[in-house]
Length: 225
Image 1 (tube, one colour):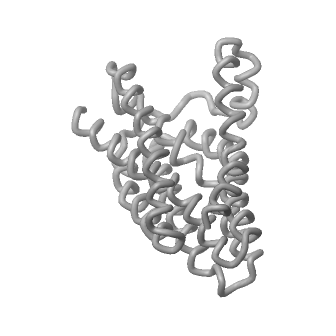
Image 2 (cartoon, rainbow, N blue to C red):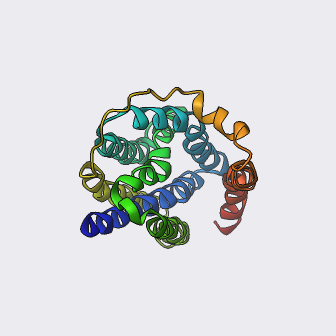
């Protein structure tokens, strides 16, 4: 159990660092040709996560092997980022943005998809494991943008793809579980927040700043470049 938990933390840290790196690196890639291209790529990647999150969460809850589903999503995200980087500048911008949107649908796998597997990995040590899991978010949020600034757009995207790809086999080996008796419905997630007064104080302060992150990051990065 301890070895599996260490592997979980390593995989989560790598994948989340790759995620935090991919957005700024994609923005820098687009800014090489103008501010509108960078903003469009980043918006396509991040906005699609709002749609992909509920769908992917429901699929994870229904799956008896959520780690393997998570691994497939990670592989798809890494491949999508690589494809966006490959076609940008060679095909029309609309094609690259469309690919970024499709790739962004898998983005929730990197954050919530990992954390959802924590109870099966940590067992009775879930409270302590949750603290370490939260630290991986902080470490990734600090390291990812820093690496993007250091490496730039193309190299940053290459490193992001590599980090997410390395985490994929770790996700594949996460423990299985019995098939749930009751299927999760897509509307269960959005409806759970207003029905749970305990979640409301934490939900609003968390979601509001996160929704503004791409808006704040784009002008700041554009001024730096």
